[in-house]
Amino acid sequence: MTPAPFQPVRELAALVRTRQVSPVELATACLERLERLGPRYNAVVTLTPERALAAARRAEAEVAAGRYRGPLHGIPYGAKDLLAVAGYPTTWGAAPLRSQAFDVDATAIRRLDEAGAVLCAKLAMVELAGGMGYRQPRAAFTGPGVNPWSDAAWSGGSSSGSGSAVGAGLVPFALGSETWGSILSPAACCGVCGLRPTYGRVSRHGAMALSWTLDKIGPLGLTADDLGLVLDAIAGPDPADPTASARAFRYEAEDGGRRFRFGVLRGATDGAEDEVKQRFTEALAVLETLGSVEEVALPDLPWETAIRTILQVEAQSALEDLVESGRIGELTAPEDRVLPHARDAILARDYVKALRVRGVMQREADRVLAGLDALVAPGRVAVAPPIDREFRSVLGGAARDLMGAVGNGAGLPAVAVPSGVGARELPTSLQFMGRAWEENTILAAARAYQARTGWHRRHPPGAAS
Image (cartoon, rainbow, N blue to C red; front, side):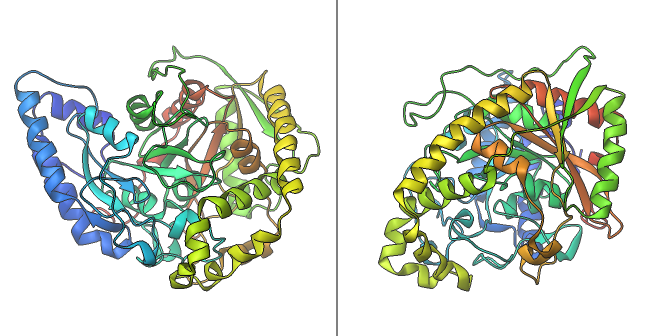
């Protein structure tokens, strides 16, 4: 049986477990698509065929011997190129680091190996995960991430290659990372699903540090169920990362037809494009069949300003050696070569104030969420921006990202799923954000939404070829 693109992980797992499809066939098919189509989307930095085929052969032998490890056994995937993989470059998307390599695997990569998953490629990303303040899609030495839905649109950042690769059916799932929007944004732009876990749910050992108190690693896939299966494999404590929580996580794929209580932040669609507002209204009508929907409000706090201050200061510290060496002059985006120097003007007292304000924000966000299963909002206030323009010029730069500031600042989990296709044939997205450690709740809500809609089964025209 020849494996086809756009099959969710659970479907592929059933085929592997019953030996209708071999892991070697799956890996070979993905490697071929990554090599042939990856350049179309600027999605791939490095293919890993030797590692992939060795892992696929091992998985095939284990399945044949009755040693089936679980739903990721023999399933191919790609990883954002800020995750270390021994024996291959880990470029962090930056031209001056093209030859950078580490002799260990990141913990998330190792855990996927233990689950039997098959790494096929290191995927493209915005240089230094956007930590230099980029303003346009061309901030990557691999070229701008091309959206599978339109070669005139961006795939989103900073996990651009992960979004493009899953959206184009090159791999069933991929790992990305988010500091502020870098999983949910490419998922929304590319019409796929993305999960930002609770801060501390997944070890960041072996991953590039951008902001120590904001960085998170999570999956992109075709369904919310796929995301839960991957999170189950990569979550958990890690002695190598003291921020990784000891809280156990086990994915709960069954929810017993529960009813949900959803909240919508007042002003959630302020500044959004008309087609995004329309798809969101339609999504709310679906959610009302799954439970209740009510408007809620957060206090007027400097959500975005505080989190941006924390991010910029911590990024400046994390990337200090590169900035001080002058090698940022070799970066691709012109603004990335100069903007970091301005951050030296941020005062220490402002950083401390931002940290203190964040404590208030966390308490207020938890207060609002305490009576809800999830806050819901558009995954992005606009569809994927043009690939040849500064994305911050879209909507005149007026749109806010309150959900992104709240969620990332408070370290809350969120899942984005497709919610439609707009007038320009570009996807829209719906996000569910929950209380800390409540990934199972928001995944259950997202699965329930997907059971009532078919947007996750709609793929870019021509992407399967």
